[in-house]
Image 1 (cartoon, one colour):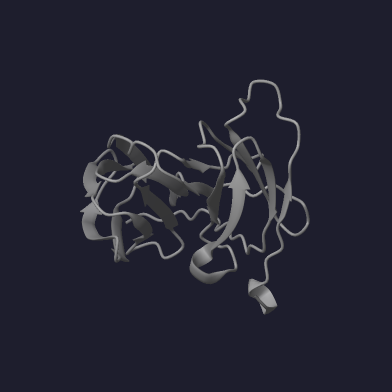
Image 2 (cartoon, rainbow, N blue to C red):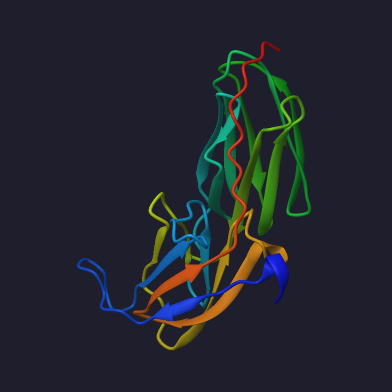
Length: 205
């Protein structure tokens, strides 16, 4: 892998922090400067009981989608709730889910069922800076990193398995990298990312 897509990763088999079990895998995602990367999704390609579909919410607030990245089991529904004092028009052209929620105002909610695995990029047809992503999965081993860049995958199977780390702004094919890990490992993954933080806008539509 070359150029801006070159990714360096290191695996450190460290002692497990208190509260973690021998079959947990801890993933730390950091940028090139060592800062934690929030909203990266760690996915373990390993057998496990598929999680049950659930009900989730993505708010439109201060001209942003909240949360920016959401991980949901396949078959789940997401309610899009407008908390802004103006209208939004939410859509996606992604192969995993194509839909359009035409103009809806403050306090109104629209629901969409996500019935196919993959990445769904969201936008607003009125506010071009609004962006968010839904990662639809069929595995129990999928966790999003927090502000500290950390995600813990609980109950990993024994033996070597493949771990995928995905972020919408990660500079790599399909915005993800793959590495081999084992249960009980602590993995530090430095990645090349270009993070964008659009400023909220004030409009009256």
